[in-house]
Image 1 (tube, rainbow, N blue to C red):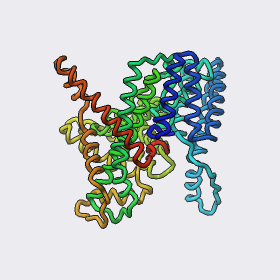
Image 2: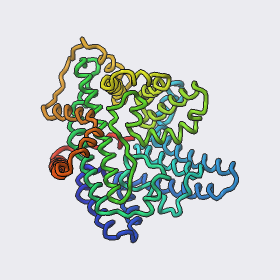
Image 3: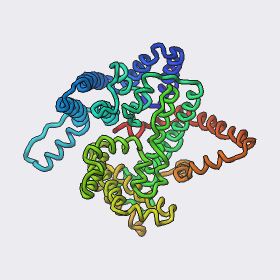
Image 4: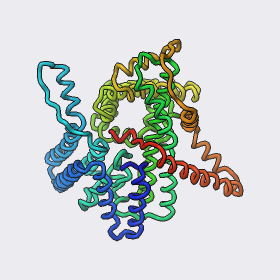
Amino acid sequence: MAFNSVLFLFVFAPLVFLIDRFLRGRGSNMWLLVASILFYAWGEPTFVFVVLASSVIDYAIVGTMHRSTQQSRRKALMLLAVIANVGLLVYCKYLNFFADAFHALLPSVPVPHVEMLLPLAISFLVFEKITYIVDVYRNVSPPASRLRDYLLFVFVFPKLLAGPILKFHEVIGQLTIRRPTLDEFGHGLARFLMGLAKKVLIADSVSGIADQLFSANPEHAGFGIAWMGAIAFAVQIYFDFSGYSDMAIGLARMLGIRLPENFRQPYLATGFSDFWRRWHISLSSWIREYLYISLGGNRVSPTRVYVNLWLCFLASGLWHGANYTFIAWGAFHGIWVCADHMGMKNLWTRMPRALGVLITFALVTIGWVLFRAPTIEHAVTLIGTMFQPWKASQFSLNVQLLPLVTLAIGLVLCFIPLERVLAAWRALPERVSRWAALLPAAGLVLFAAWTYGRVFTSTFTPFIYFKF
């Protein structure tokens, strides 16, 4: 059940919030848990029982681990729980991929395939469950006092399908004791509507430009069309994913839960290290705390640090999907982040900021070609075309005026320095700001009406990150 579906907008969400408001803490968490499990079961009626069973196993193993006084036993139980979750992820998402890789190395050895659809949000669920196991093992947090609390952490519906990736120790207090207010509800609703507009009005509108490029023969693409399609996808994936994050953060706040921010204008980054401090912040934070530090972090030799960084980004690419294109995308980002640590970050600070932002955006866009292309060969051909200004296209994109205008608006919004705009807004005289405050409210109402109209009249488009 997607946030941009008619069923969610007009049936599920109103019902959840009305009943939650009516209960006012008396059984509201149990209601939220039941509603969240039903929300997931709507899309995964079978796999929901697997997630429930694995969560019960997590709770039992972690409880036993916490009560144990023997460090060796605690570590063994921690590894058992982590391996069980990673094993579930590998079985559901990567088993056939690894089998194909093995068969490519040894073609004479027959390798069976497992026919299984990829469960919704399996990567997000496993990563969050690992935070619970490791947080308790590291004594960062005590275990959940009740199974219901842990199940609510796993299933709470705003973040369930595409994050942000939660850390158990950061949110468990908010989940167990929720006190939603009307003020928080209003702020959350505004954030939700902003995310819905990002998805429906911008991401869905420009998606056709990117789809036409990546579905065509890459050898027939020209320089201009290759860049236009790649930039269209850069805009699409940002507004699609950040739109989902805004909607998740808004819905959670309406329930009295503060989720962490997941984006901070990533296309204003200078350098890839800066980009990953702004893009999918919850994933980069998870990788740093639960993988990079476990590999030794900065406590090892410089060469090992670079290897660890590259391995982390390789894992990030593989986390996105069982395809060599995702691995190549992760390796691409890993190389540039290592370059920053080797001294390239000093180069970014010496050049004009606008130039650094432009170069970083161009490199990130090239990386998005690896991410979006169906095969490595397809991606390499398109990237090669992007470095051939003289190459003319053998086909034209069938693009109407509205998607082109939307693409231009999306690009402008990507590069507006919002922090400066907000600072200037706060500096307005009180008598001016009081009236000026009506403009965002009026704009939000207008865009909400337009967005809801598009939900009814346009073809439903799922969020990109649902496949991960």
